[in-house]
Length: 263
Image 1 (cartoon, rainbow, N blue to C red):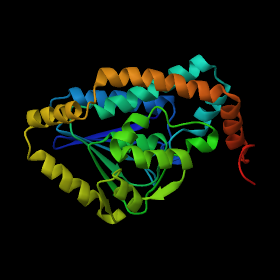
Image 2: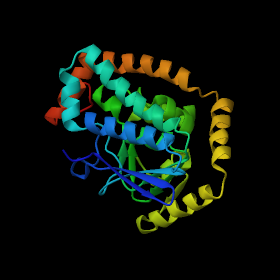
Image 3: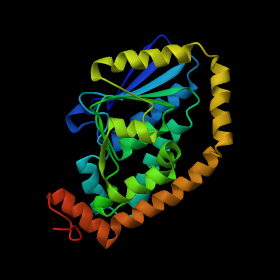
Image 4: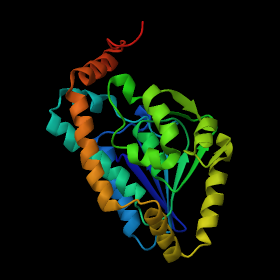
């Protein structure tokens, strides 16, 4: 079976490319498991100085895979909770990775894809990339990624985007703090390389301690995050099996407007 994550090493940099280009690198169980393992392996490997996360093809990540969403609609609340906990572990592994992490946002990022960008230390995006936290349009909420999005863009911007589910461009992503830098698509590799060059000049132990310092000052604790993840997984599981969540998911899969949508 083909791998959902392509892993390459060069000069101390480990690049993890989500590799499901035919579905815009959307999440399914295999991608979540492989990417979680790859991030955790990179964090433990003394030869890795930095991690770059990107997507194969035209997109960074479209969020939930269509077949995965079908499974959500048919699964029990307990099964949905377990499913959400696996996604939560992926986000938590990236957020608390001891190595510097760089998001190379080569294209669209939606839902969980936005969560991955928010979890990285440095985020550089192509100017034609689009972003969205569209879960409310399905009668759901972006519960699992919420702590990381909130930490990245703040309470005010998070409230607006969670409530409207609107799609926004790379310039807006930079303005609100989701991206640190926006460049032309042809300049993306150069911009990432420059960030990696800066990271390579710093002491690896100092970088680990710098990340721990930021977590401590920002009151970000991995153990506490795991407790929050359990609560958020329970929330999204409850919403997925609720009448509104079922209507939203079914409407999306049927390619029609949900019952509550304005005509």
